[in-house]
Length: 240
Image 1 (tube, rainbow, N blue to C red):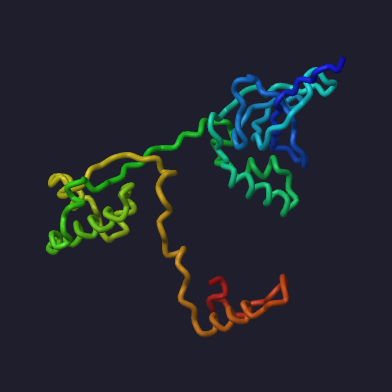
Image 2: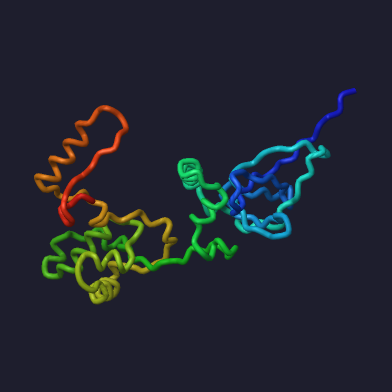
């Protein structure tokens, strides 16, 4: 008779040590398998380390390959999304640096210490249904209110005070007036749900004639990957 082999789920964990390999552990609870991107506490030699699960594997139950169980699961949801893990895998390979140390360096200081990952809530202002029916002419003599109304009309998820201040000046008085009139309401949202706002750094700079000449020379190069030298005095715009 052929014996039926039982397979165990294993966790491939990146530990912040100067070794270019992953370490296999068993889940501490078969009913709760941490997903890739979650942090776990593991016994590592005579120490206890905070590692990151990067993949799941398998092991034959009862085999000579004895694996330790992880000590504890820190996160119920990943602190490093799949896209982040892919990027950090690339960084580790490109710069020939151990993956465990690369992932560890990518985490905020408190998360490196095993603190809970808590996203603070931010206050945002949104237009009420009544305000969405208003006509722009209503704000002809209240330009700041009009600017806020226009911005919130294009942002149904709401905008926080910093974003509204970018429209010019302190938005507080206008928001109080619009709240009293029933046009805006205050709420809270997860900061990670906020779409990124364009900044001056995100917009392409207007190039000078010399910069444009340099860009065209680079774009004209069709010989594949090679080094090019930008020659210019300090402040001539080489970074742009």
